[in-house]
Amino acid sequence: MANTKRQLFLKRRMRVRNKLRRVNAGRPRLSVHRSSKNISVQLIDDVNGVTLAAASTLEKDLGVVGKNNVEAAAKVGTAIAERAKKAGVTEAYFDRGGFLFHGKVKAVADAAREGGLKI
Image (cartoon, rainbow, N blue to C red; front, side):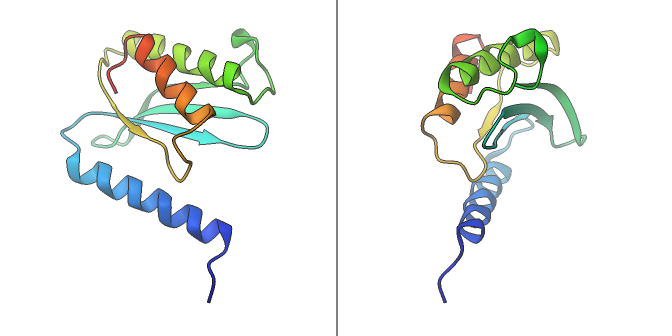
């Protein structure tokens, strides 16, 4: 029986997440979620189960409210890098979830790297 798109997405997400758990050395996880209208990023400490920093296109101070393109993703990436520095985080694992590392997801990662976050 053929898998639906949602089932394939969930399988990819769990494969990525399980690999991150195996190689995790206490570093936080930079998790990306991309919807049809917005993109959001969280810096998560899995040991304590808390979110250290977050950024999204829903925030008015970024100036990209409701936009979901590569430029907006890059602004979110730079914002999360700045907030990670304020939280005292210099390196993290990149959790792309079930999304392919291409386009907006890649733009977030590249902008976070340029902002000083080691991924």
